[in-house]
Length: 314
Image (cartoon, rainbow, N blue to C red; front, side):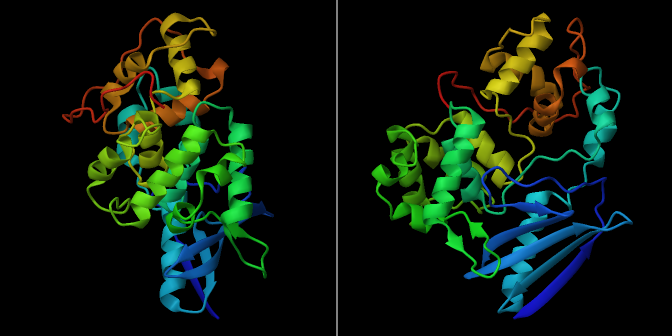
């Protein structure tokens, strides 16, 4: 086995996240451990934050290219190389986001090493509470994911494995029949090469995915944010975000905004709408600003990339 270590100094304040509810990412004693499929190998990657702020990545694999690829995917997933300086310089004095970004400059969008993992997670999280979705994800990983006997870690199944399953199997994990079929159909498109989630032209893959029933703008935005590094995509149909924007607009903690109102509120924050949405969704309710003046930051000369919302779609 070959061991590779890489020390990275993040260009912007960074902190390690906790483990994941799906049981894939393990956090113990300040070290993250994750099984990553890279270059045809299962690679155990460990990540630790050093006293000086640097982040140390370590991977053990049979081939050096597999170890390097696994580390690269974990660097992407953690966003350790993201330079968020332009976002913070623009938002720190904003009346809405300013207090939130100043209070937590290290916040990043939580991502997955592979975009198909983000798509799988998004489909399983549609219109149900997160604990139930996480339980479904754990069942999928346990039954279909690869396992490393030495570490006891498991990795989510790739598209090729999910494509070979009957939708009824996924339904037995408590995933609805319609979403089980959508997940299998999406996996088959990806495994056959008709959809390339790694391609530079993300929009082309999104259009093909949206042709599958049960896959709509919210699912695509979650794939883009969590699997493709697209900070410009806003999951406007997210229930948490609908509640937050409803409260901001009315002052009523029970109010809910429409998808169109969420897009309208976050449009001035382009091309960082997805990261702006993450701040709103993770902020405690008592830290949200009062509703009277919701003036976004000055536009930076770029058009909003928010897509036409379909209020009834996931």
